[in-house]
Image (cartoon, rainbow, N blue to C red; front, side, top):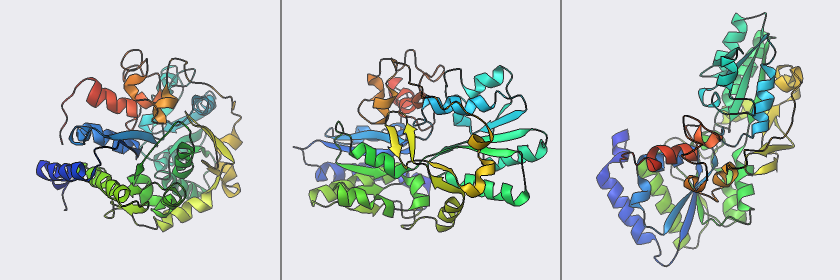
Length: 370
């Protein structure tokens, strides 16, 4: 298949759904986690849960980079823009994520110089255009977006730009999956592996899930047929008593990953000893920071940040939703105090957040298509 509409063909969707129903053991309840927030939105946007047998439960995972960022890190990043000679830049989905004193957009409304950018290179250009001011980029994302940050920093170093830095919050997916697998309150039968992250890191890093935890992993694309085929592949593994890593998204994801991107990341970043994740706590070696060679571009070296831990509002249950323990609708604030116009938690803000997906495609009963 070559075109998007082929991956959304109702007849083919129905045929694969029929094969899933045949492959599923009616006496068994399956819990399959889609790690990536993009998969969660695709599942609800296209109504895929409605074509699956009722004994197959899809559980959303921690693959939304904005959602896993704890409130304390938001506060740390925003503390830098309190300096009047500083310009903060960030992606659009970061602009509405609340810290204890407001979102970046609210800081902007109060007079701070906060600007939305589409890439870290945009932030570097702003720094070049404003040599008398310091410009920092609030970097977020899994391995998907880390290469663009790395390449921007390599360019900044080559050009000798001195008024640019990065507040680095890039996280890595494998330690988060391991933390979920080690959680005593989580039972899973398999994983729909993240497609975007895997374009960079490939499929090999997930082999520990199959070998050590005996759980099937199928790296998946984002169209309806991609996701349904991935579920079917997981069911076939379970029926055969197998656990291995398979690549459904072969048209995009190379098994060994993007080697030039990985090389750039190795030059610019190093692993943090530990990093706090919303809902998952501190996870060792689960995030990146700038290497010694790029310390002069590290916002946390250039500026003093508070580094104070901040808990989420007591009534919000972002952590439980992120881990897949609760569905968004089971949170007491969902659709009431917490909604897209007034988000209390990051999961309602991000375009990949589970709460945003439920609110848009399930809670309001908006029409979905398969």
